[in-house]
Length: 207
Image (cartoon, rainbow, N blue to C red):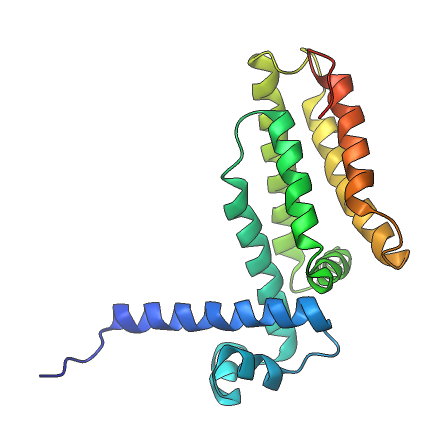
């Protein structure tokens, strides 16, 4: 006897198919860039028809925005492995940055869309505003907890340090792209975080 798939099963299948498309889009955008990638290529990579892709994403821009949000969600999942130590968090951030550079097209898209999304009318404005706020808030809380645990010096301006880190991270990525990827982005980030850790840690040591 054959049983029909219920609403819950259909929903799960739809989510799985959508994620399958987004995985394919991240690989294709990351390798070939946005302009050189077509929806037909992504559909083939995902193993579905063009119509099947358009069922989930009405056009290339909507797929692009969804892919960037999906990429950020994956970064959030990876961040769960990090301990409460600020030194460990900085090291893991460098590891994640190094891994992300294997798909430079995605890094470029995230930076470009993030800059464009500063305009309130941009469709991704709310997402990037919330993402930035969350990042600063979570790092501020991590810094404060580390000071209470004795890893960092007391009396620091935790929010200012968190905003400095966020600005440095985005600014260096932008410079790396505009400079034609001509310098070692991770090395420059590591040098900055090492200097910062020496300045704020109780033991005065860097990374």
